[in-house]
Image (tube, one colour):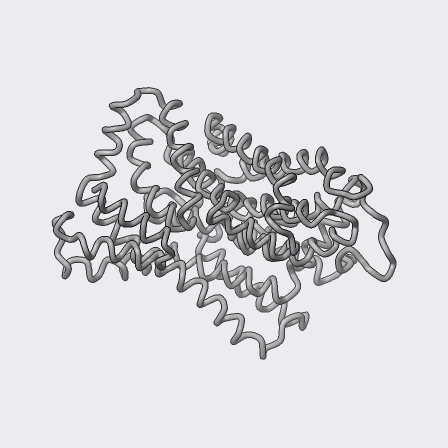
Length: 424
């Protein structure tokens, strides 16, 4: 098994397409796993034809329509109005807007791109250093996954067999804690990112964001997360049905308000389809890898090995955290979730760790890879939107990274943060 894993990581490190890497490793090692090629033909199709995974392209469509139809800017403007009395408020606006975007799109990188392109230029005009803007926006992008709906959690629930609705409930308090922690970090560090130690005054002809005057457009933008999360948690919608309703809602709202034209729809659908196809291709071919692991009883062996090393759940969780942070640094997020979830979930159960709690620990750890090179997608997207270099980011970024690690520790060792809904 070790040569197979080594070959997989080597292919990923040299830049092979993720789905191709997973599929190729299995197809070239069918004898190792005692597999027949004809028995694997239907596995990729079966993996991507499940109903829960339909939520992925639908939530991606919601994010694409929001960005192009101006709803992201409306949410940002609404946060700006609500937080107007806070000092250094634009940083707080970026964090709050990231949380709202996360409650709609479920994508971390999409959140970074949307907030970086709307709030980022306004922060620059207010006197923030480019490196500080990029650091804050990159870190706040993690809220796009911690606050439901979350595409990695949909993947985890589908592949491991955990209720996606429960996973969404479980992330609400950790997401809120992470949001408040970023607020506190920004409040303490903002003066180091501002040339004069404070935000410059508004300029009349250069508004911070489009004004969020009370009106139909602002109300419809604000209603979207209420519709998605309220529908899921009240039991009216499944997560997939909520994604479909949200997609239809955003399309109707943007077309009615004429912030999106019919002529733009083909491009919107094509862009969404390309992104969704990339993710679903990864799922299809990692399913071959996961099937091989199950047939070879690798997860059971890992569970037995972990228990043989220690009988302490705390030591196990510390070890898992260290391993997953490293994995997240070198593997694409969705691929890492699909690989490590089936491997580690059985071991966590053997240690008596709640499957829902462990899911939040695993996904949060792997999402850290969006902030840690060499992959670090959030870091690169934020740097590009803020026109900052990584060297400009470093004096500010590690404070937000440290904050994330502290909250991760809380999520890991305080299960009630994730399992809060069971105490109601």
